[in-house]
Length: 202
View 1: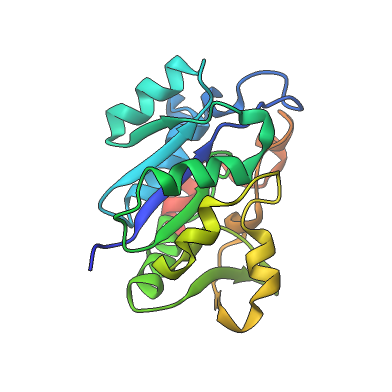
View 2: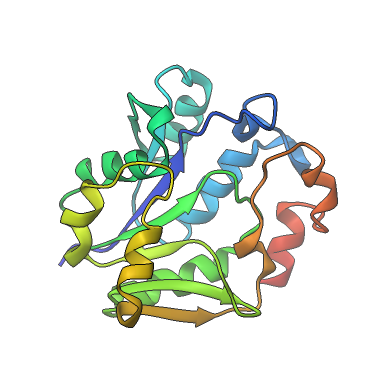
């Protein structure tokens, strides 16, 4: 069976941030979205990234990392639409490890642990920190048809709610699984120095 593929959802509008947050430089000058994308590729052999049609700079950066970049022609439809686009573009995958482009502080080791459980046969798997579920979330191939039918901004959250017995919760010591970026001030308030601080914990 084919290994799981990484899915990076990167087609948000960044409306609350006030600029394209995924291109926001972090420590070392690397953009937030590129950091998140590189972390994901530590755990999977290939990845597909979903971007907005006009996001040329981000598309180029993700392509340089080795991602297959696809466009969500209706990005205003929300995260569910982006995930459906990604799964449709990777129907040969042995599962999907879904990550968000605005979550750069997840420890790469955490992502690898989630990917390992998915490869070992978990139906759905998500990391948990201090009782709170975070990202990335893994889905086995059995969910493919449901994933391509998604729309709206809830993404695959409803699947996790509807099928709790299929969801494996993986405890991790990684607060980064809960931290996304909506506003510029969060970059300094998050309590992490940067990518380098995350790697030092791994």
